[in-house]
Figure 1: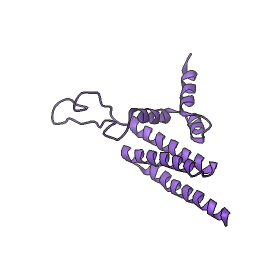
Figure 2: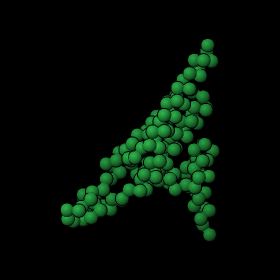
Figure 3: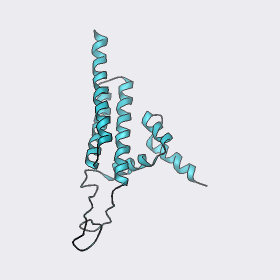
Figure 4: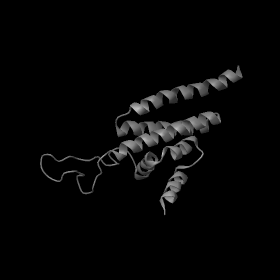
Length: 149
């Protein structure tokens, strides 16, 4: 019976993260993607604090990294704020388009930078980060060193 009790929370966590993973790839806005990054970070912390299995901790980490990459993909497609107030693409006229800033999106520069760097990683390095066999920093440094003549 004890084994069943221990297995049940693990199965529940996996089931919830599986649902979240499906919803992550259906997300169409940056705030939605950011919400999944927050869910992943919370799942990682909760799994560690509850002393759940290494399998669950790795699964939560994997989800978190995937959510960050998805956020980075979305961020890379958005127009950049160029400075000044209000942030805008076209400076004058009725066709002026306002650009949301990171702050407007509920993001900080560090999270945005990490997410976009994950989105740029080749699949091999991304898989290593997702599996936890490499860190984001190490994977990025490998890419930079490989590009040097």
